[in-house]
Image 1 (spheres, rainbow, N blue to C red):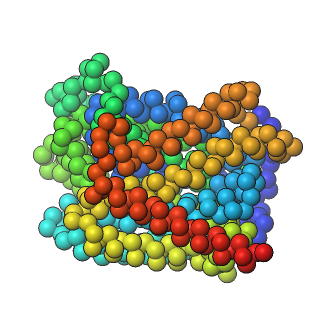
Image 2 (image 1 turned 180 degrees about the horizontal axis):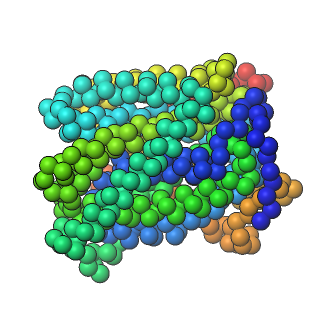
Length: 467
């Protein structure tokens, strides 16, 4: 494989190249390995283990190969926005940048409501919803502050987060294996239970797909990598193998400890650890430590995604696709301060509004998660078709890594990825064989449509300014 070296000096626009191959691997692990949706995927039942394997081979692998090629061939700041811009122009790149940025601001409240729910479980079981809302707002602005700091310092939050996530999932998996051999499984593993379920399974399959997304996030800081042409493919391979192993281990641990009908979206992780370790004083202490570690991983997750998404928005604004405020950089740290402040503002507004709309923390978590996830998934549809177009029209661009196979193979791989993402978008609001619950689906669809309309207005205004 041909390697193109990039000197470890400042990139275009004064960005410092501070991300090593290890940083990028840990960054990717922290971005994709998410504890907050483990319980949701485990609620599929034993067949969730099969869904993980199916999704790994038919989505995660081709998706990783495609992003490895794009990230190595086009290593500029902006990542996904830059790839789509090169393939389809400013307007589509602007849409991708808008969806990619705004989904993080919309997702942040759900993560920090989950954060507050777990904090309540650990320290204050009677915590009110509005106390949780307050905690979510405070954590939002702490995340903004970390993101505005220099990347050389803020990168340590996801680096440590990746290690903590891996340790928690390893503990859950190993403890689950021990419980299975000594006490028996809470859910029986049989051939029929492993078979993919087409009812509950399809309802939660979008969560499995969602849990595998994020390979492209590090490319948002493409000009802050020491050697993206060499390191992006390596980071994706190492991180990808680690991620699927940890997901399978942790899911097995949950299913070993808790019957499916007792797995809660908010309490799943702590309940699992408590059941796995028992009632001794030592076990309770370890459970508390795991809970604190899980709280840190929620924070690390949001820092990781805001670091990548806000750089994508900044690059889109620098290209004239989003309002100039997104392009504002910190004068010293060269971080996207404008995009970060807007993220904090949107997150604060949304978390308060959903506090008025949702009755429980779990309702709030799922509504925000589904809403922001659909917005999040939309740009990926463009990435996979952009990959095919760039392979066809950008033949002179050096590709340090190339997805193996002829044109037919590339079309199959990109089509598989496209279909997995498309079905995830649909199944977030509808499960085949069941009617649509408009009480749940209505606000989710309405929020997605409103978000899209706001984006179109912004793009129209930017288009007139550029004319």
